[in-house]
Image 1 (cartoon, rainbow, N blue to C red):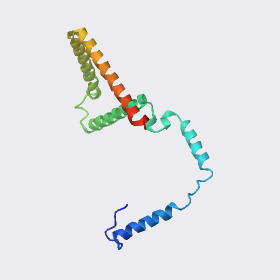
Image 2 (cartoon, rainbow, N blue to C red):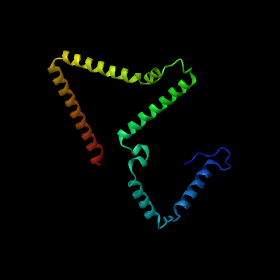
Image 3 (cartoon, rainbow, N blue to C red):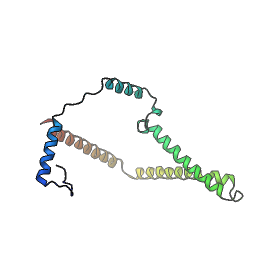
Image 4 (cartoon, rainbow, N blue to C red):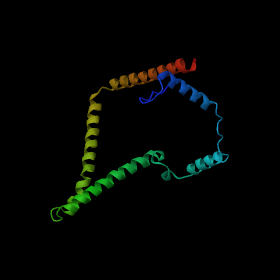
Length: 163
């Protein structure tokens, strides 16, 4: 039931009775048929959209690699535009062209250095861990994954298939 409007002249019982009456009258109304051309128009539109190339569909229907590349290019374009605006505002004699080009790309070198350091650290840690610990860890992880799968399947069968 809907809430009674504060300025309604009807008492709550009469309001509920009127609501039931309106619901009853509306439920007895015949359903309006859809236009005869609706089905063919909908199917034609679905076929037309399915025939479009991926770049003409919405962004969420693009391949994941294309979405990532587009986002990366967008971030790069924004960074380039901001750098161009800063470069246009500053005195051109104070910044050399090499500095203006190298500064936005310095993150590439830092990122590569970070991943190289991370890989080197991983190699040192893997060399320090005894091999049987790795095998035991993989066995425990696999056992837990299988147990999770079995519990999920059992819960599904119990809750949904036994109704």
